[in-house]
Length: 448
Image (tube, rainbow, N blue to C red; front, side, top):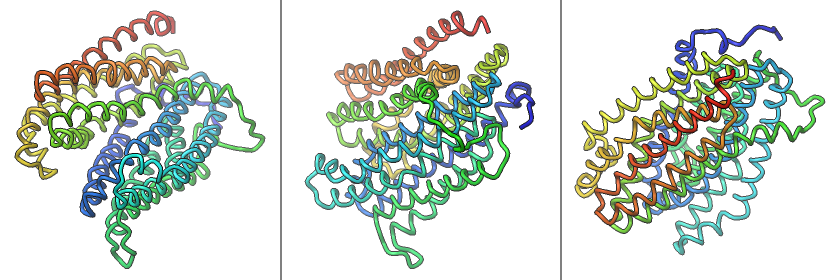
């Protein structure tokens, strides 16, 4: 392997961010589109089908939380070790990533096999919902090896600065899923009609295709890291280093479902339409937030590499440029939510009552978009330099400590006031992020 410096330490930071982020942003937009299309097809089956899939959402959230959180830890460790020119440790971290993916899959395969029916019976006595939900959850969990292994390889490649293959794998998985959804759900092209189970099968097939693609790439192409199990020994220090960043990221992903439960409990006190609107908001905001999350996928390895290489100026430049791009994206999203909220809601066939509460709600919530852009970039910085617990604290502060209690207090003033909890929570968490950044700069970054 050539001993030349990675492009993340030499190429113009702006051009580097653009070249590394655009592929990830594109793939994240496809993921956002898939989320809408998948719900659209399931809703066509029946209301019970949509309810069954919705009830499975917390379990899927935990699955994705474990997968994404682990991969974030791998990404951070690999990029830092490459920056430090510790090739063997970078290779070992990448190899451990495969092992951790398989281990995490086994955990959820057992959950899907042993607890799917019990989980659904704890929520409903409707046998149709229990049957469909059990089928969906068991398939998604038992055959989850695709998502667990694929995302760890994906983040490993991103840590080296390679964004094209991860983009192609995500596109392959999402497009396969979108194509197969109607075929398996409604029984097209000679395939038996499988309903909700068909949606689950389409999902896992897309994940497996993406995994096989990246396994081929990692085995046949040249990369900055080498994954090999020859003479491999488990190193618990490496696993600890991965999860020092990964565990906070897992919790950050998981607490989102807790926040949704809390908000739904508040909103249902007004009307079921408010709960439905909240669900629609999450579908719509994904088109604004997903590009920013794609941006962070490009920025994180740049920050991590230059932190390891002790190049403070490039690290801070990456944070600054990334923040500016994120603010522009979120500002455009704010304008969109203010200008055409009625048209956005009409995508989901919004009723007159939903439009009445939804139009002011979207405008109010979108006030938080710009401060959220800065908060996301600060969290990316903390994760990239191996200080993931700061990101965890900010996420808990935003979604649980401030948002839900503030929403509960404002609910006493009426439904229209509840939505102001979002900008309040974002501004408070941004202030805490700035404080953590100042501490990090004085303690660590200043001496790089």
